[in-house]
Length: 203
Image 1 (cartoon, rainbow, N blue to C red):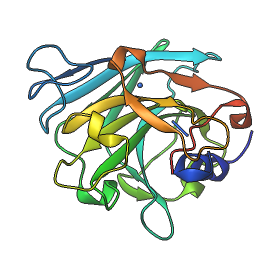
Image 2: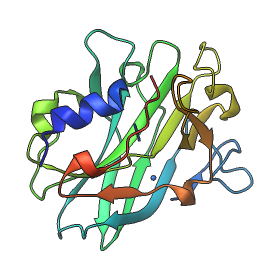
Image 3: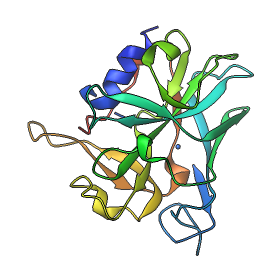
């Protein structure tokens, strides 16, 4: 298996990135009326695809911050696994440290080997080495602070939480982008070799 450092490099810009969402604040993709992407409670539930996830696997949401030097990942959110279905939840807006300087947070769901201890807050790729089983390589949980500059594509997302799917750039035309999708479309892909996953080159 490739090390998590390789996967971090992919998520943080060399290459890319969750299912039914609910929230108790404003509307947006993935939420029913009145249950969109605000700063209140927000949950995402969806499938694990590819190889089977082992019983007791750990679910974490790692927010990739590429506007700093060096880039880093920030663990924020509560996750659980039931069979081939994961659930992640957030009781508040992501902390500022989990966001890029333009006000956009990029949260990727990761599936880790049973027993893996992942500290809250900023983490190093070393923590995930040998433990990574899968990741939402084509999907992302987005947090958008509407007072920030954002990315060129992020204005299409609601303020607060939302879900996005990677859209590949035409050949030779720069970076891929994300478009809003219902959170039921998000999935975590499991593979014995992360090199086999297709990542989104978003920055």
